[in-house]
Length: 305
Length: 142
Image 1: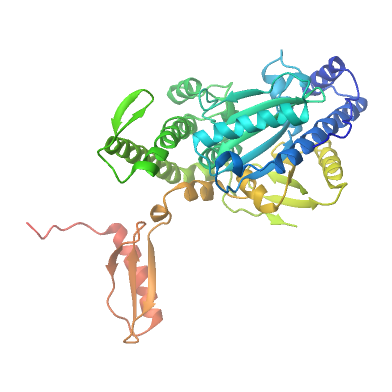
Image 2: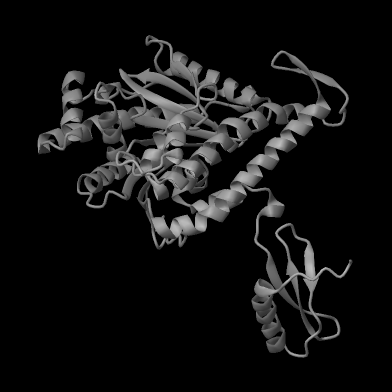
């Protein structure tokens, strides 16, 4: 892949930071919005080129099997960018890492996911930006944010960061469920940690700073646990079962401990039961909560044109 | 490669999608998105452009725009738990109508008597549905 010339930012990064600050403060001028539009176009061109480069890499060589990966990319919506800037005043528009992003979803094990992250980092470095700093691999499986687990690779193209989100199918589904949950019950849920949710769930009086009701916070906690406990555990253990299911008395080493395959199967079954129970509980609670949040949720009225 | 401009209502799930194709598609879609985004009145509406090789890829990486929360959660449940209990109306080899109650796990919980007409079988379902709610439990084993 030979890179065509990349468009430069329409202004200095310091100026772009000020444009972002003015937009976040609701004081942007028409000229600011023009600069923002040009900057976003510069990000998006890089994103699109990266996506094209990733599309021609023969990933089955990494997985040693044919694998159906879905790839898509976007630049972040304005309100999500501005929310981010408002949440942490020290953050500036040009330092946000995921203004432009590519997402890859596929039927991967955790090891596959690591392999793909390495491959993407290699693509960044070898093909797209040989002279730049090494791309950063951020493992959100080790450090989930508000329950979110994935592996991100952040590299730079022509001076701007592009984030590649790599998600297994379970991680992707969970992320969509949780974000949809936040769409319906309150966007701040996307950033609330288990500690904060516990505090809201247990508060005697609703707190004016977070418009999240206690029962919703409780559901969010349970949803986050599905990701950080249930799915995390299942993703670790399911491959062991897939290989060795027939031999229940065999001993394998999991994270430095010797365990019988039989015990692994029992743990997985237990996790599955917890996940199913939580999801069913959420389904049961969904109906009354949804009709409170909005009268017409559940009637998916989308039309593809 | 197609750039899909999506207008998505976060609370209702309503969605309008416009595909932009061709060499200028990406830039045109982004321009249209930004114009809509700058003029946005309703903070529950999200404008996004997603580029992917096909709509199927998009539906896999961004399910949230295409499925309700109920559908997303339901599809995550194992298949046999994937439905609520239901009454099934059927016509037997004898030409008579019956109904059965099938549980979430697929098991048949109860089978009705035979009815001569479909209308009376449907009435039987309604009657069962109503009376089951208020029915008391009588333990005849003791």
